[in-house]
Image (cartoon, rainbow over all chains, first blue to last red; front, side, top):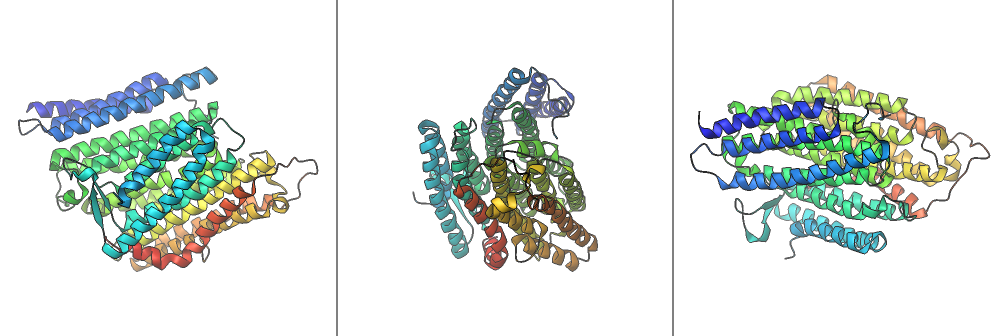
Length: 100
Length: 475
């Protein structure tokens, strides 16, 4: 098994762990972190799979950089919303009942 | 320099930033003026596509793979025209809606500008990765708009929406990663001939991941849970933008991917998608019949109407009937739902209440707005000559051509259910109001924009041939 495939496999495992976390975890901060684990998994797959010919491929690396910028911005927005929710209601989870 | 493709993305970015600096008052005037120009650009682009067919634009003169290519075809030109045509009346409406300086207005124009830039870029993107970036731009701007009101309910709805949108786009991104690993390219045009039914497992998984992620963002049953609180809780102009345009963006992506890149693979999931669509129609309509809040009724109606879009997939065939039906439904529902949320916003401002019960007596006091609501309702039910009628007619014709009778029953039952929940509102509106009920005057421009949008959705059925010739151009 080449190094790239190890990265890709680890990425798939991280992605699955993160996905399970986002779905099952209640507290918002841990949920946001789970989303970040999920994102890192996708980035590892992107870089890992593109490395199989030996040399590094610059295109997916540029994509991952863009993806990291997007993930940072999304995380910041999620954290800001979670803080606002905490300030307004004192809760750090989304209740299951407030949707009509 | 004067290529409308580039300006359709640059112009909203410019006025969004300017609105942030100038503040809501002057920002609103600038936005309306710029949206007028964007309408002109989109129409010019559509005319170009009809004359000259599909074309691409290399941003800054750097072609792919080093730079970014933008591409326009019949379907994307149609979606661009729809986006600008809905955004312009809604901007006029929003200017009057926020005239009292509600807290939501502070970032409304900026976020709307970014949202429109993201949408236009999404319709023009020519590769899978740029589609991911534009999806995120649209998603983050939309979440910001839901949260801009700042109340606890809105923030909770925005967070729920944000998690759905983020998980959806990361699943899409993993799909892109697997495709790049298998084929070494993300360009839609290059990928189309490479993917066939004997594709390796990685491509099948990628197709499934991208489809699931986009379905989550389109809020198709059973992924609809985030939509009613987000669309029902936001201020009226925001709900209208989200229901009319944002959910259509991810549907457009599913449609394009299943037509171009994943055509050989998509057939296996088509029946399942159609069944989910049917379930969405049933569940969304049922909830719309039960809810007591008028805005939630309209939001649940969006869940139901999105179901029709997914009935298209089992019927996709080279004759193009189902594709025409899907596009027609997307356009008709966009216009009608924008009109409906706008009308409901007027009614809620006028009566000061958000329940169906509070609507008693609006028929005598606001006939124009109620008429707009009724016209939009006629489109949702699918009565002639509305755009909704044309969409459902094409869908039934496609089902009959392929001998799939079951879908005909779904379409007809969905129309009856839509009639039931629209008449819930109309019946209440014609009741006599209690003598002491308060009534606030509402700017006429808000009533008229709702009416214009509703009339457009109604007259759309008469322009079907022109729209379908644009769809066929360059595809």
